[in-house]
Image (tube, rainbow, N blue to C red; front, side):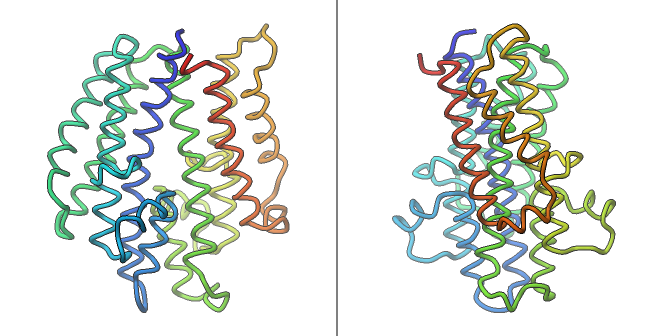
Length: 313
């Protein structure tokens, strides 16, 4: 496969995953702001920080309020990670690799772009926010369903999945890291009712609240939730799950008789690091330090994938 085609598939699904993650972050911010006991500005600031867009935000806005954050993360074209920017970038990449996609996948991406472009043509009010966020998640699910239901399990499929799980691993790491160091500025809050509400909200932001309750009824706490989102292989947004899929897809692309590519070696190293840990080990090392390393590892892996497969060659 040409490197440009592989890159188009990889980035198409990174952008789709990013748009969904951004929508989930906004929903989280809205929930947390509703339960905040004092000024909710820090909660909205944490959402922008999690999205990795704080520097760009402060260049354009003076206050971290709901209207500014919502507009910036949903529809601001100056923000390359806004939902509108991501959907347009996903469609642009999809057009570039149109012949590699099934009709169903292309139509799902194109429909997502047309629908969301119309919904985000004007600023989104509080009244319409839930409807728009639901639409983003639903369209992302439609594309993912079309991919699984209509595409051959070949190198095209593998590059699509690499994009999805690289973006997902990065997002889960950032959500946990910001939760621990931004949403709880004072150690006095740890273990309190507000702390538990915020941890519950983080679970909801990755669609994990109900599955967590099935496994850990009544045990909502930092260590149990961190274990679930970092090390539990049953949870499709955990770091362990994401890296197991990254290793699997890279193994298919590497080939059984070929020398191990640098990106596969990197993925195997991170996967082994996750497989050989308990959550006590993670907390002994320091949750922030562990997550900072995970974010860095995922970023290096994404860059190595691009280099090994010559996306822009």
